[in-house]
Image (cartoon, rainbow, N blue to C red; front, top):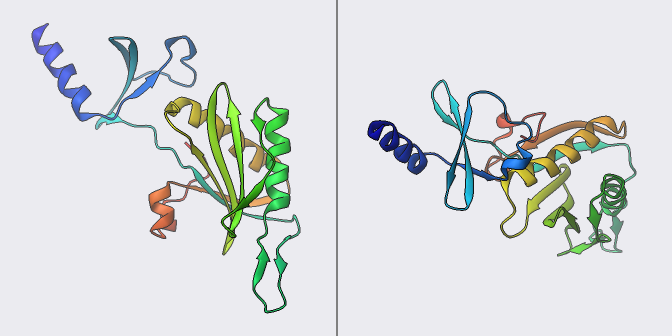
Length: 189
């Protein structure tokens, strides 16, 4: 028993674990175990090659048939960036699934942002154009990984169902910022 406890202790130190509420153990199946440490339950996923971690892809790129609403100035400079129409559509969709969203507002002259709140967890959603449309959904403060995954899955499902959006790809923020497009996935997590 002492050996097993020592092994689990080293596993906790080496692995990135996911803190979760044991009452909502959704989406976690076989090959995983949960342990109680103090007040928190810790979920550790075991794989063939060690401990697996949930990879969240918080950035999505896509093309759309929604008209570009970019406003251009007299000197061929962008006066108001495009994406407001897409941000409004995102807000309306999230409202139908019970997520409260603010109205889109201009974000530093390059895109549109909205604040979303679901189950007391807050997210910042940004829509902008960078070669193609980009939607980024980042958790604010200490949002649990599973709550972020739920929000990303909801947005991902909608992007695939809505026929106005095509070529949807998801990236981890580091891969997207480094331009590593080979690590794209069709699922956010």
